[in-house]
Length: 308
Image (cartoon, rainbow, N blue to C red; front, top):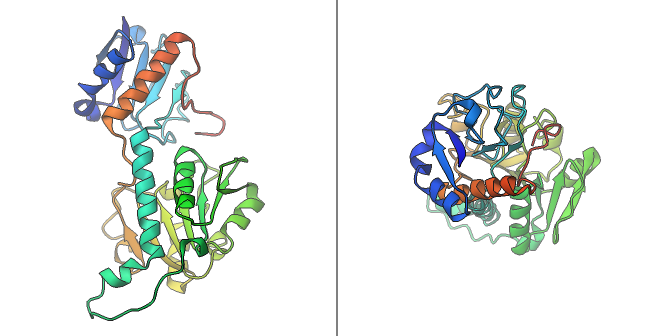
């Protein structure tokens, strides 16, 4: 029998029933436990917020399966020598697409002017068609590709940028430093979905925020450190960026005295763009354990050198 250590105690209530069921449905005979002798553990299900930080005793473990999409808080752990897989949950992808498409359409259609209109002003200004509103998506991982294709399906001209070259049907794809400048230049909506690595921190800074069309909108459901906060506030005050809708921050919850809360051109959402759902995530975990037991490649295995 396989021993699966569930090392994410805060999430046990969500997974205690659905995870064993998913393993059974995948044909895996396993016991899922919250405590075990490290030498008996075959797989570790993990959240970076968990107390477990030393993986050295888990000499038998074949993989560490994270419940989070982001792995920046674990990938640098020197004791972690086992294969590490990040979570790519179909439900998480769906919810991210819904958030990105919803807020893209909100800003594209100018909905705020009509919803927040205490003076009851008549504003007979129609938005341009989507085909005339260029959108740039920074990051072409699973989430970025899904969002880029959804927006392209609505007729937005979408440019996607990634650090390494990608090909996505219906999306203009660029890469490299020169490609970043090209992708941002003239964009009217910028969506940031890059992973957090030393190379992506402050991707949007004073220099790059000057490249989109004046009055452009920034949507960040990716990672807080992708944006230089002070540079963004300066760009908002100057009118270079017309609005920022932000779901992720350097410190969470966002401190009550942070300037984003009071800024009239900032919308704060409380890290809700994409959340892992226990039922569908359990299916991903079960499939990876099945693959490992069958000697097949693991899904969503993290490249330690790249950090994602």
